[in-house]
Image 1 (tube, each protein chain N blue to C red):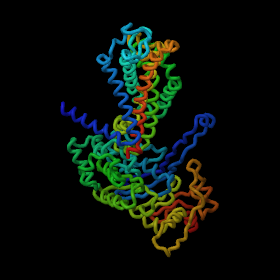
Image 2: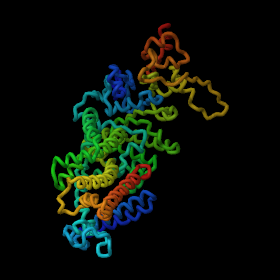
Image 3: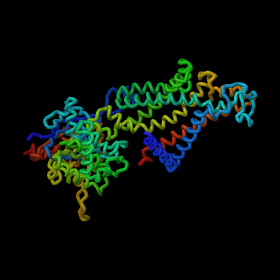
Image 4: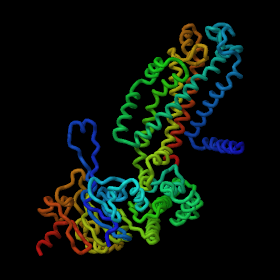
Length: 292
Length: 333
C-alpha cells in the first residue's frame, strides 16, 4: 500500500514538472496551482501560523495602521488583521468545494442523460437550465440563501443552484458533438447498450472540459460566497471570514483604515485568480488540437 | 440459392430542422430524401459496390443495412430474417453477424480507449470467453490485421497511431465478432494513398478467411473496379444502374454512368477521351427533380424524362438500368 501510494506521488511529480515544458498554458496552470496551494495551505495551517486569536478583541489598539507588531493592522474591535486574513479563507473554501461538488454531481449526469436521450427530454431540461442561467448569479444566490438560512451547507446549495446550468451546458454541447461521431455509432453497431456507451464512450471525453469548468467555477463560487457574507447572509460574526471583513472594512474605509478591507479583498482576488488560471490553462492544454 | 441480403423499396427521409418561428408559421415539414426507393439483393460471398457522389444516399443505405438507422419504409431481409422487425435478442445476434467499417478512422475510435480495449469491448458486450481468452483473442486479431507485434499496440491510444494503423484497428474491431456481413463505408478514402492497396488487400484476405459478404461504399470508381463483384450506381437516393463489374465498367448504359466512366483518368498522355460532363451541379435532395432525377443534367434527356420516373429496365440477366432510353428501345422491339 505504502509503495503504491509512493509510486502515484512519484508519477505525479514528473507530470507537474512537464507542465512547464508545455508553453504558455503549462505555465498558467503552474502559477495558478502555486497560488491555490499556498492559500489552501495557509488556511489549513492557520491554527499554528496565526500570531493571534482571530476573533479575540482588543489584542491590539483599535484601527491601528500596519506596523511591525501588527503587519496588516487592526480593525475597529482591535482584532489582528493578519490572523483574520490567515483564518478567513476556511469558510469560503469549504463552501466553494461543496458547491462545486454538488454542481458536478447534479449537472454532469443530467447533461449526459438528457442530451444523449435528445428530443423532448433535451428540450425540457434545456429550458429549465436556461431559465436558471438567465438570472444574475449573485441575485439568485442571495434569494436562495435568504430562503434557506445560514450555514455552510445552505450557502453551498444556494451557490450550486446558480452554477449547475454552466455544467449542464458544457456537457450538453460536448455530448451533442460526441454522439454523432462514428465511434459512438461503432459502439452501437457492436451491440453496446446506451448505459455503456454513455459511461465508456461519451463520459470520458466530457471529463476534461468539466474539470476546466469546475476550476473556473471555483473562482466564481469563492466570489459568490464572499458576496453572500458581504450582504449579511454568511455565517455568524464569530467565524473569521474575508466576507465579513469586507463588510466592516467598507464602513471603516471613510475613516482612512484601508487595510481592513484591502487585505481580505486581495486574498479573495488572489484565490479566484489562482483557480481561474488553472481552469484557463487546463482547457487550453486539453483542447484536442494540442493533444495530437 | 436465395439472396443473403435482400433490400426492397427502401426509403429514408430525414426531417429538415427548422427554426422555431419557421416551424410555427409553416405547417409543412421538409424532408431530405436521402434514400428514395431502392431495391437490390446481395449473394453470399459477394462484394457489392455502392458507388455515387456525396449526397447520393450510399452511406445512409449502408447504415440502414447494419441497423444504425431505421428506414422510413421498405424491407430488408438478412439471411431470411427481416432486419427492421427484430426483438432485442435477435438484434443482438444480428450485431454479431453484421458489422460496419467507417470512413474516418480518427473519428471511429474513442480517443480515450486503448486499442486493445476498443476491440475487446465487442467481446465484453457479447460475453464471449473469459477475460484472459478475450485478451488473447484481441492480440490474435491485432496480429491478423497487421499490427505486429500486437503487445506493442495493445495499450496504445488512437492518437499514437498512424491513419493506416487506425483503420486496421477499426477493421479488427469489426472482425472480432466474426461477422458474415460487413458494410465498408469508404474504408480507404481517408487513408494515405500509399497504404490504400494494403488495406484493400487486408480486406480481401479477411473476406477469404471468414467467408465474408461485403457492401463496399465508395465514390472512387478505380477502387470499386478493383474490389467489387457487382456494382450499383446511385444518384440522388435512387439506383441508376446495377450490374456485374464488367458490365457497368465496359458497357455502361445510363448517361450518368457513362459520364462517370468517361471521367476516370487513363494513364496515357495520348488518350483524349470524349468527356461527357453533366451540366450543372447535383440538385437538392429536399426537392429532387421530377421524373428521372438525372434529367436536368442529362445530355440525352427527352420529353418523357421530366414526367415519368423510369423503372428498372433489364439489359441482361444481371444488368439493369433506370433510364427511358432503354425502356424505349425495348418498347420499340
